[in-house]
Length: 121
Image 1 (cartoon, rainbow, N blue to C red):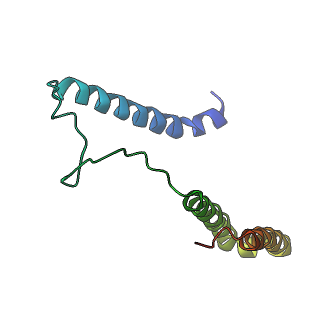
Image 2: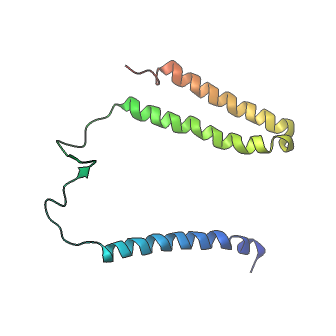
Image 3: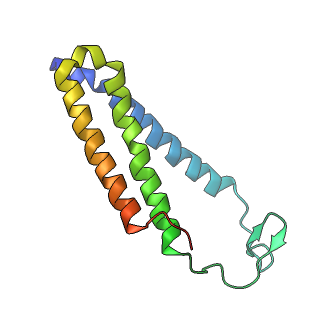
């Protein structure tokens, strides 16, 4: 076997273990779980409050826009952490690439602010 293929063995084993755990857990819950259904048992029940009306009320698009923008700008930290750890090894080239990355990110943030995406009415 090739040396590269052996190095992937722990990852494959972990993925198989995770998939097996999920399959066994779902199968056991299906086998052991209760099977008696009734109209009263199938009613949604949340925090002791009975459901009134339709649960599909419309949300403002602003809510989703802010959530997506939060995820977008939060992901920058994921890219900055390895850069900060390897800052000395990357040298000037790494610094210039991070300046470019942060510049593009700030340009996008400026665009979002100019469009008024973060203003609530």
